[in-house]
Image (cartoon, rainbow, N blue to C red; front, side):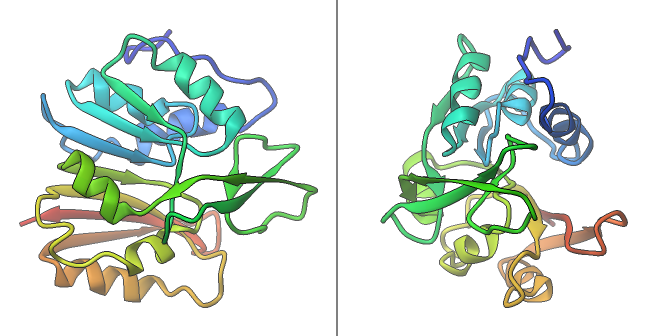
Length: 211
C-alpha cells in the first residue's frame, strides 16, 4: 500500500524501480484536479495511480501483455482507463521485445544483451490519441519510440497540452535529442533537459511546460 493506493509488483523485475521513477522523475508535473492525463508506456500503472491520486483522469497505454495484465488489475476502481495498445508512428501494429530478466522492460528496439521475447501488438498514433481524449498532460516513457512518435506531431496537435514529461532513450543512433528538444520548443514550450549521469547520456528527461 502506498499513499497513492495499493499496487502489486513482481519480484525479480524492474517494477520497484519503475514505481520510484514515477514519483522521482514525473513528480515535477503540476497535475490539477480534473486534468486529463495521458500515460504513454504505463507499465504496471505506477504513474497512473500517482496522477489519479491528484484528481486527474488518466488514459494509460501499455501494449505488453504481461505488463498490461498487472496494470489492469492495479487500476481497478480508479479514474484510470487502461488501453492495450502501443503509441507508435502508425496504426499498423508493431513488434515489441521484452527481456527474461527485467521482464517489465519492453521496447521496439532490441537494446539489451539478453535473450529477447517478441510480441506483435496493436498500435495507435499520438495524433489520434490526442484527438480522442483531448488531454492537458502527457507523460511519455516508451523506450525509444518517442522519436518516431513525435516526428508525426505538429504544433496544432499539442495546442491544448499544458505540460509534458518525456523520458528519452537514445537506442537508435539516428535519433538526436537536440532535434526533438528544438521541435518541442518551436511549439511554444519552455524545455528543461535533464540527462542521466548513470547511462552516459543515453537516457534522460525532457520537461516541457507552457510559459
